[in-house]
Every structure is written in C-alpha cells, then in structure tokens.
Amino acid sequence: MLKEWVRPERPDDDIIAERLEKARGELVKKQMEIKEKKLPVLVVLDGWGAAGKGSALGKMIRNMDPRFYKCETLKMPTADEQREPFLYRYFVRIPAAGQFSFFDGGWMGEVTSRYLMGEIGEREYKKYLTSIKRFERQLNDNGYLVVKFFFHISEKTQRKRIKALEDDKVTAWRVSDTDRWQNKYYDKCLDVYDEYIEATNQFVAPWYFIDSTNRKWAELQMTEILLSAIDTALKNAENRQSPLLQNTFALRPIPALSEISLDKTVTEEEYRTELDRLQKRLSELHNEIYLKKIPVIIAYEGWDAAGKGGNIKRVASALDPRGCEVHPIASPEPAEKARHYLWRFWKRLPKDGHIAIFDRTWYGRVMVERIEGFCSENDWQRAYNEINEFEKELADWNAVVIKFWVHIDKDTQLARFTDRQNTPEKQWKITDEDWRNREKWDQYETAVDEMLQKTNTDFAPWHVLESNDKRYARLKALRIIIKAIEKKLG
Image 1 (cartoon, helix red, strand yellow):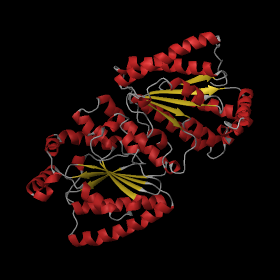
Image 2 (cartoon, helix red, strand yellow):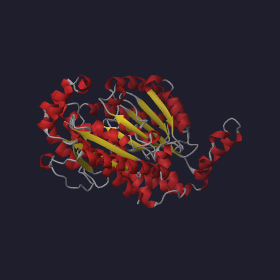
Image 3 (cartoon, helix red, strand yellow):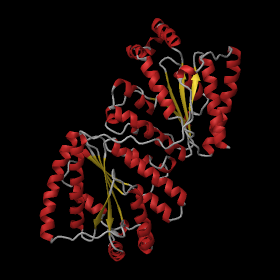
Image 4 (tube, helix red, strand yellow):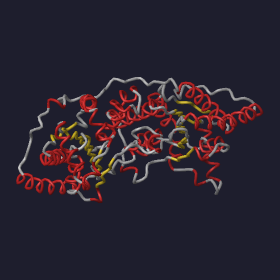
C-alpha cells in the first residue's frame, strides 16, 4: 500500500491557509460535539523519523480544550512496561467517552522496530500483528473511533531534516539513533512498513497516509481526514451494532452446573494436614515464578455465599504479599464505565513474576450485566470472543491463567444467607441485592452454563469448585493452582 501510494496534489499556499483556518475551527466545534455524544477518539501518529508528526499534532490541537484530550509520546516500552503484556501500555491509555487521546508513536513503531532489529522473529512478529488487529477491532466494536496516520517522506527529505536538526544545538536532541538507522536502511524499513500497513489496514481502523513534505500541508491533511472520520462516526453512533464474530479458539467440553455432584467432603483432620502442606508448597512455587518472571492470574467467580472470600484467603495467606495482590471487583466507577469494559482489568494485571487474584472478574459482562440489562445483547454476545482474546493475550505473555467457578446448591445458599442475617458479626456480608439475585437463580445458572461452555479454552480453562463443603473447595483450589504453576515451570 505505502509503495503504491500516490501523493495528493498540494494546493497553493493561500488555499492551504484558508482551508486550514476553517478546519481548525471545525475541530474545536467537533470536540464539543464529541464530548456531548460521548464518543471516545483515539488518534495514532506513526511514520518516518523527522517527518513532522509532533509539529503537526501540536498545531492541530492548539485551539482545542486541553481538559478533554491527552497527548502521549510512546516510544519503546520502559523497563516497567516490559514486565507487562504487550498491549498493556496502550490499553491503559485509551480515552474515556467524549475525549481524545493522541498517540505520538504507537504499536506499529514498537513492533516494526523490534522486527527490523532482529529482536523478534517472523513467528512472534505475526503473533503481534494478530494482537494489534484484535485490539483495534475491539476498540471499534465497543464504540471507539480509531484513526491511524502514517507520515510519509522520501529518504532524501528525511536525511536533510535529520541533518538540519543535528546542526542546531537546540534541536539536536530530537534525533535518535533509531532515526539515523531508519534513514540508513530506508528501503529495508519501507518494505517492512508496507507489509505491516497492508496487514493491519482494517475497515474498522484504516490507515491514512500524510504527505509530509510541507508542514502546513501535512497538518491540513490530518485535520480534514480526522474531521471526516468524526462526522462518519457520529452519524453511525446511535444505530451501530457490531458484528458477532465466530469463536476461533478450541474449546474444552465442560458439564452443566446441574450435572455436577456437590457431595464432596473432607474431614477436619484431613483439611488441616493438607492445608498446611499445600500452602507450604504454594509458597515455594511463588519464589520460583518470581525468579523465572512468570505472571499468575487467578480469577474467582461463583454464587453469592459460595465461599469465594474464604477460598481466596487460604490462597493469599500462602503467598508473599509483596508479590501478590487481591482485587475485589465491585460495580465499575465512573471512569471505568466511560471506557472499554476490559480497561479496569488491564489496569490491574500483575507484573511478570507476580500474582493477581480477582474476586469477581471480567465475566460480569456475560452474567450480571447481561441479566440486569447493563449492556445490550449485542455487547454481551460479543464479549465471549473478546474475553477469549483477552485471555489469549495473557497466555501469550506466558501467564498462568486459572479460573474458578465456586459452586453450591440453592439450599446451601439459603442456609448461609439465613446464618449471615441472624448473626450480628456476619450481617455485613448479606445485602438486599443478594436476595434479589437469588430470585434470579435460574437466569444466572443459564448464563453461567453458557459462559463456561463458550470460554473454556485450553489456555484459560475453567475449574468448578464444589463448595457445599468449603474445606473441600479450598483444598481443591490450592491443588489446581499448584499443578498449573508446576506445569508452567516444567
């Protein structure tokens, strides 16, 4: 695509100036309309070093209200960011509804640079391309406008600009070793950029080429293209419905909840002996995963009063608190509601070598949000595949992903609810919402069965913990966690 691109004819300077003044004014108006309509806009600027991305961006936004946009300069990941999944630093920076985020540099620069420098091979490079396409598609499907610009200049123009920057003491710092390397191997870079753009040019997030030979002309192109994209997105926002994609991941069979026997028990003596042994082993493994920088993510879902909290307590107490964090997930806060529903979970992922335990998870999308009508049917139907993609990112990061459904029967839940209500020190555990949810048991069971069936993958399988006997469920959880970590350690 890039190699065949034909530069648009540049208008006369006076026409550029006239159109630019008009476009800048229109962008200010559109910013307020975007705020009102709650459209999140992500603009990514990539291209050749010294092509003028920063200059064009600075001039384009200078009249916009700075309260409702953020500019991020994204070069290669920092040491801390390298301890997170590939998409982490991009996902946590996505804009809230009604706001802009401008990325000066992005995932294209990171991935193509690593590929060109030989840090990653063909197989890993293609895996990254798949991740990028999923990321951009997910943003679009969840109501984001994603606009990607590639600032293009010739090898000769780039060389002249690099020299001009280097010759001035004030601007010499702006030229990086990467810029010099890029110019030296311009044709090699051009080949990779062309292939990358071809692979990631999706209808939901197309590429736009900017002729950067003239700075005002570059700004005009970018601004007018952005305005056109915003107009289209605003027109389609109210009636948009994203397609439901077919699941592409292998799924394991799993029984329905009604088919699972809940008569599993252990004696008090067996529980005490095994609990001590298993916790000691898990503590040892925590040291090993830290040394080998393996992240572990443990997700708990289950019925109210099923014993999630007690189960989590027995797991967490075996771990070094400096390398483990438990995340109790409640209803989303306003900043979380204003973004992609997975954003708040991306923000809570552990560093490599650390453990994150989630008490409630991203599966709320296909349970409580589905049943209570907090999202559309299209949203929760689409979420099965989106969640599988999210968990695949974690697995490709080399994380151990363990998912528990803590299971009890309806009579056991009633007995525990009644006990909580009648015991003063336990009353904080029971709410009116718990009783309302109980009335919808059958609806929740249907939703859980579908959730288990559609997200029980090889890389992130579900484990049902029979928790009528809480002690049995705690031991089973510890055994499953230990086995999964030992398997990863080899």
